[in-house]
Length: 482
Image (cartoon, rainbow, N blue to C red; front, side, top):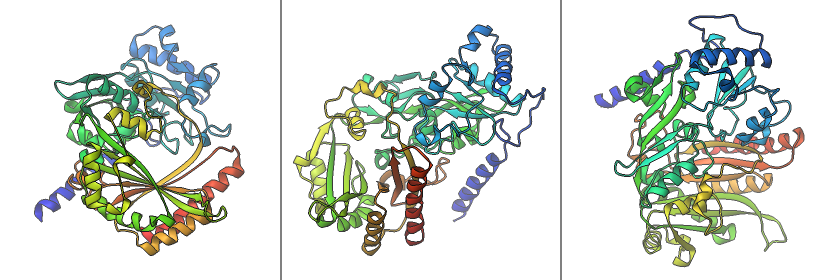
């Protein structure tokens, strides 16, 4: 009991120690060597940074000018929009940055921090832009964006079973680098290849191997970060407290994450996927109810995601029903997967004909909805289909009853548009202490639930309608299930 109490106190002390540190992107921070603040106009900010970065880096003005983009620059909009993944934040009324800095070398980062600190200007740090609420590229106060997309180096060392990835690399580029060196190594991270490494890993990094290997942060062995004073620190020089914090606590909360070094994990040459749809008339309620608990202790090699959506019922004159899609990743061949499912979850009725075998890198494409046989080098593609969207997540710790699920189906059918995604936990996630990293959501969670809606019509009326529906769903679910 005493060790448990000490462990909890350590977690609280670590959290408290980081909550009060001043950073240049904090409204309360003050520069150590104040200099006169320019007027918060884009032209004055551009000129200030042009001179300040030149002085900090000893580079020529012509060189520095190639990484600075003010709103008057013809490339400003294309660079700003390139990594916006939610069209809700592309409207003319969304506040735009005074400047975008696109570092091409590490020394540009501490220079940008020092220059921003000296005029107390907020920095937003963007690596892939997949944060649902645009937190890496919008603000309610004058700000600049430090856009990391040029710093995308990935190197893989199979003898040491490690990889190095800069913050601006995408998960797809990391996965491709691993696949290009080994077909029996992988990395546990997200299922969308255009997500940026910097934001994803520093926020925890969950994906479809979490039941086998935990989260991305559980495999980080070193990192580089630029602190408030413009120092580039590695794990040794930053200390274990800060190293703990940036693994799950959000890198931008504590500095600018430059890179991560990670341990790779073993994957078999053959993995197996299935995608099975069930409707309410196929006993979907019973299947979802059992899935909630069976996934805690089923074979750790297996991950099953549920996608729950209102769908037209072709057997009932076009009225709505609920479709549940079961999507899997299994780290093994189809024979063993069918055996596991037959033993632990026979009700789903998985047969070998439902299964597709492939390599691990190909499975990433499967989860990204690419056609079977798509070349793996599509993982290097950074383009992304935009939509207007809203997402909101929770963790489920107690199974939802069958009656509760029936009520949930009725609400989804009533609303018509929002859907749900259930991501199974258990396995390795139950074995890692909540305070091992700054990501605490471990044992005790049955699954992660995400409410999701996407639309393609611009305008306040459409946004109000769709946001209203997902908020109504949230308000409905919270008192019943959380």
